[in-house]
Image (cartoon, rainbow, N blue to C red):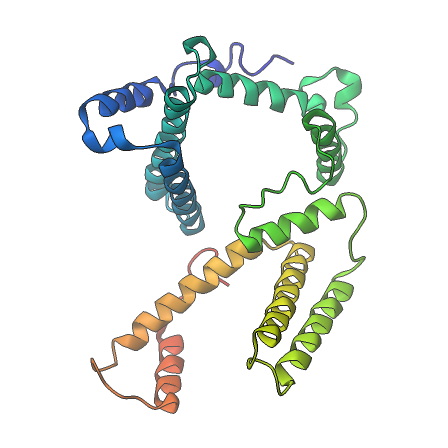
Length: 285
């Protein structure tokens, strides 16, 4: 099997990032705002663009995906450029070219069932077996001390819970059925109920901390229930947020600015908005 960087589309210049790099170099010279940018500034923009691309993917909007992917690529190339500038990287060690080579080599090494010899390719098996072999190779090549090392602490908490559960399950530390993890959710909800039912709940910093801890346990268990249901909890929650926004916007059209409404009236308008809503959008629950 041919290495993907040699003679394939992945190794051509049809999608070169060089024009973006040239644009950034021009901006760094002629734009006062761009001259002031730092790697620390770009960190926030990079995260923002990644989330905007994720939202476009959820909407399944090709035009939005194209636009947001472009924004994300722009920020990625900018990171490479500022790494050179701030960390005084030698021109021959430019991180962008090195990053491209590195990720291709890494992916080839982690897919011996695709790029290896016939013996390696025969080991492919199911998707689950390939995923297990991937984790084993990743740990051996990246020098991870724990199976959890590959989950960045900076991930959004819900995604982090989902990925931590996946990693732990990779070595067999997992519930053996959906019913078992559902029982765990019920158990954690019961412990949360115990804390909130206490006379002291919410009246002291210690009581609030206990409630917060138990609520965190509930959310962690729910993320793992989603994993057992083969549902991405971040995507599911994002869809629920969109649905709430959509229905609330419909409800707001019937509200007078500054009006004082009873809860019962708002509930009635909410139910009307639900009935008026058309078919669910792709990805909505």
